[in-house]
Length: 533
Image (tube, rainbow, N blue to C red; front, side, top):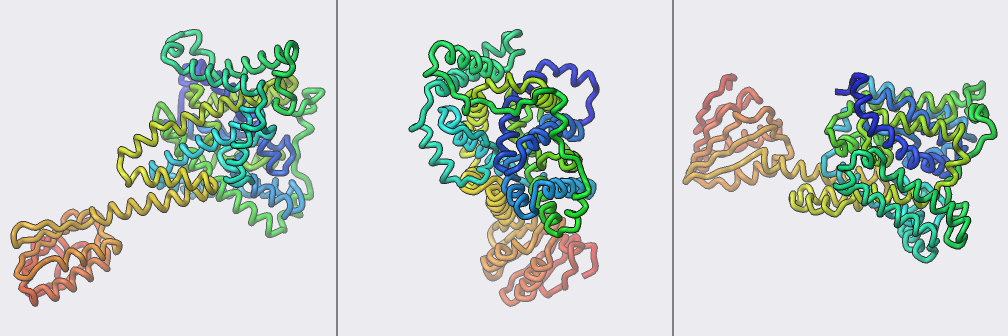
């Protein structure tokens, strides 16, 4: 499923190239914002974005995952720069983390990605959608000039993000509001059934139209009615090089000082932390991307770990930030119609061209345009219809979904997912608790059936059933459907067999032998047992 012919990619070019442009427009300020929040050189964010698009896209097994610098690692990088005494120490740790991720991939550690319940993954997507809305409203109103709204709260608290949301309505910029409102309307219009049927219009992504509108409006406003224009601090701010060749001078290549860092134990601690968190975020993003994929493809998790490992090794060697698969950019690609890895590669190509040749022109783009694109993406991820659908599925699905959303909003991505996993696991155990053992009654005859795998978690339920069986009854213990029976369960059954004659209870045992040996007792009939009692 992951290996495609050239014709496959050529067939989807008409969707992938426009989608790649949209992802590029979203990723560009995010790369700069993540670098700024990490206390690292701004160009380091662009380097990791380039590697994510140009290199990791081809090593990854996912057709739609987009990789780059992630907000979830900003605190680690920020603290590591202080702890290790400079950004070069982080680069060494990044290379080591990449090597660890490669090892994890070859050790098949990616299997952990399959253990995230669907309700928790959907809750993560909805929470990210809500975070995008919360974080982008200030940019849409022209209140805040920082552009760091990725899938986590970065160094900010939930309280400060909500405060900024409310304060945004007290510092409204008329120009930004006009740009963002019209841009959202254009995105909604482009998503209608009529527009999708137009062969020419559907080739142009709505997000690109929104950006063209924003640039055109602001240029006209600056000339004819300056009070309605957007000021410079609310525009994209990309470093401008005088010559294209100056681009290469921004790379930080390995030198002799790297060897000094290798003797510092703290570098290895930072590397382990980066490797674990980057791997978890990548696996979570991959699972979420598979959920969003309209073609329902499945990305191999072990290959994703290897791809992220290669990306982090190269990023560390060239002076870039640590890389993960990023769900916000992946969702933006899917939302814009991306179909294959060409969309991610295209975003990398445009990042490269923008840094080398187009920076001056891209700095005309108002942040309000990009905020509108992310607001539209956020609404799709946190659509109220999704909440209704999970409510109809019952509390076993709805509660893990909602609790995951609330936990991520009030903490951060990884802590919220951990809480969601605990809640999801509780409902799995609860369902297994009741399904593993059943007791049915027909007059004085009772059927105690052991279904599936019966673990020590079912011991309390088994005791409850045994205590409910009255005297002078006939009991059949049927273990024919059980593949495994825990030793604690067998001990409980053996105790029951010991005491059953005292209450004049006759017990029949079906296929209990073979799972574990059990003693033969008075008033017990052994049926279909091939193992010796």
